[in-house]
Each structure stands twice: as structure tokens, then as C-alpha cells.
Length: 272
Image (cartoon, rainbow, N blue to C red; front, side, top):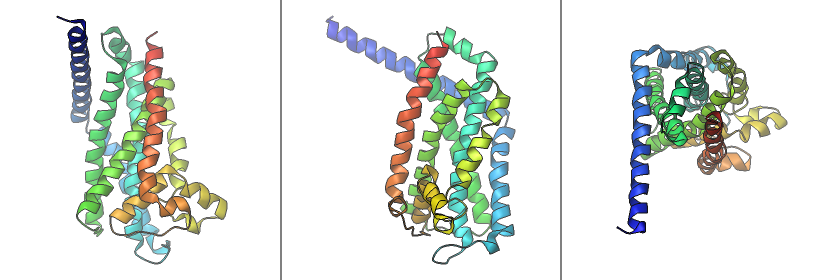
């Protein structure tokens, strides 16, 4: 057998075991959700409460540039907020595994560091699908009626694309913070990130400097693109708002290219 054939078999074997490791970690994560459904209920509690609060309590006082129903403006933003807050849960689960010795157990096994990170990411992405489905059912119950068809599927895909990118931020932070209590403090980071965006209010209605910051917030691009795909677009004045679909695809790529290598490298440092 030639050296080339041996090398090909080795590469095939490494790929097989990498995928097997990822699948085992995904099954482990989904089993935890199955045994502790309160985790998903807790993640959804705040977004659902916010929908009710902003939709029914503050909705009559909110304005949409160019007119329109505030509920149609709000719902896509709430879906984005659910995806954005998800990185806190990712960080909490990662740091919980780290402090309980689970990460040390993974490190003692012949397991690729990328499999641990990828397994966590895929598990959280599947949980995000369930969260989005429940949130959309809540929105339908409140009378939200988007355009059906490919636009709806495209918006759903962009929301998951944003969540995919934010997972790696959560994994990286989870490997940095010392305990689950510190991970819970990341809410202080996520809250202004979502508030200074177009989730609740259009940037045009903010002071000029704050509106510019909100318009260039990556989650604002996803919110604007989702509104467009759901059939309730809101025209913006800035370049980034006018190219929301483009930026909703670009921002997650940038975040992934930055934070995925950081997460893998951080895990590799823990194993030294």
C-alpha cells in the first residue's frame, strides 16, 4: 500500500472520529435539555414577557417610521433578541461543564478540541430552532401575520445564522469566566447590546450619534433584514440600513471568523 493511500485512510479515520465525537456531544447536550426542560422555559420567559410588555403596554405609544403597525415592527426584533440573549445560556452551560470537571474529562480523552466546541454549537443551534418556533407561535397568537413563502424561510435562516455566530462568543466567554455566577453577569453586556439597536425603536427616532451606533449594531442588520423578508420593511437613511440583507449575511461571518478560532484556542490552552 502506498504512502498516499495510507495518508488518505488516516485522514478518513480522523474525520470519522471527529464527526463521531461531535455527535456524541450533541446527544449529551440534547439529553440535558430533555431532562431539564426548565432551561428552555427560562430562556423563553424573558422574550415572551418582553413581547407582551412592549406589544400591549407600550405598543400604542411607539412609532414606526413611515407608519405601520408597531406589532409588525416589534416581532422580528423580538426574534432577534431571543437569538442574541442565547449566548448567555451558551456561556453558562460551558462554564458549568468547566467547573464541574466535565471539560477536564474531555481533555483526558483522545478527542479533538474542535469537536467539543462544535458539539456545543450544534446543540445550541438545535435549541435555538425550538425557541424560535415557540416565539413565532406566541406571535401568531398575538395576531402577527407575516408574508408566507420563501421570505419567511429566509428570515428564519438569517435568525439562525446570527445565533450560529453568537454561539462562538458564548463558548469563548464560557471558557474565560470563572464560575456560573459570573456568566450570569453577562446579561449586563447583552442588555445594552439589544437596547442600542433597532429591535424596539428605529435608529431614525434616536439622537443622531446613538442612531448611528444602533444602525451599525450587527443585530440591527438581522432585525431589519427579517422585517423585509417577513413583508414589513422599514426604510432607513444610512447605508447599512439600506443594505440590511447583505449585512445580515456578512456580520455573522465576521463574528464567526473572529470568535470560533478564539474559542478553539482557549480550549487548547486549557489542555496544557
